[in-house]
Image 1: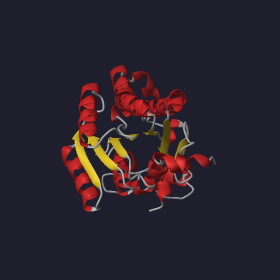
Image 2: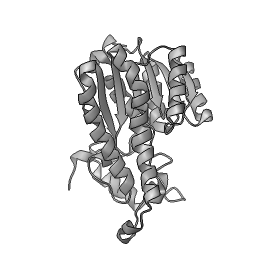
Image 3: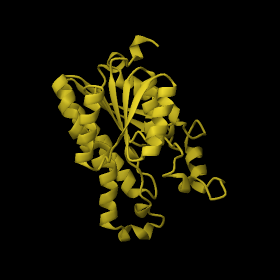
Length: 269
């Protein structure tokens, strides 16, 4: 591998690394040479990902982590530091959409439950950005080096129908990425985001496919709005993550959002 994209001296923490997108990114960072901490709640999926990484000849370890708990994140941070050293890369891929704050009828907006709304923001903003940055960021600042990669969404840029709380919370992630990048740039820590397009996963499968596997009208609308006319594959996020993680490849890049969306945000009518 070109040294431009080599991460052989890096230690990467992927919060939400037990998910489909986070897991693919963890795999890619490991295969680029980083020692990877796969952090998440599912022990079975975490161990499966670690096995896939080690089978490929790379280094990884699973750390059971609840991204909504500062105590859990602190425990993982201490364990990662003891096992590997000070992390130099943090990927925040925890998050998702809660069906309870999905609006299928315009008149239902007034019936949104505030507790469910707050839970969506907790998941995507508190667990998907705030707490991991608060826990892992200080060691990076002390070392004078680090790359934080947040996972945004096409709905960070333009709100999508139905998923009202998800769109709003992901817009917050994008805004906070730019804010933190400005605050921490003088101390050598870069903060960027990746905007995935549509990647079928458990959290959105029911919106994309009927129970018999046939596509829903929403799938047809998404693909008609995507110039590449297909969904993304999680492995197609790896290049963007490795680029943003590498100090040599993107050392002067901070506060940037890198879209991997098949052209979705480039098309209007």
